[in-house]
Length: 70
Image 1 (cartoon, rainbow, N blue to C red):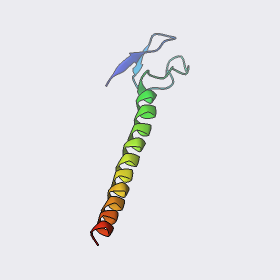
Image 2 (cartoon, rainbow, N blue to C red):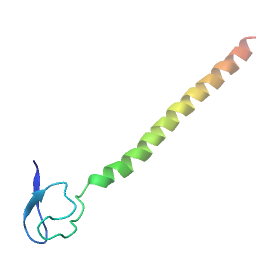
Image 3 (cartoon, rainbow, N blue to C red):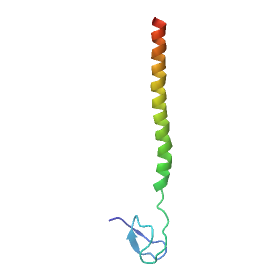
Image 4 (cartoon, rainbow, N blue to C red):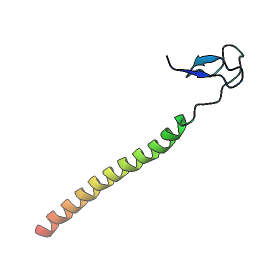
């Protein structure tokens, strides 16, 4: 099990703990856990939007090309 040190009492506690079981103080959040999620979701949304937009544009161009040939 991964361990870390409490910043207040220096006891060894589990890495994902939010409260120290010895001094009962709230522990600071681990760095880098939320930053990736806040960056990843907008990027995935943008990628999905571009895919949908490309499909819609390709469909519109295909329909227009069929009109040109008629």
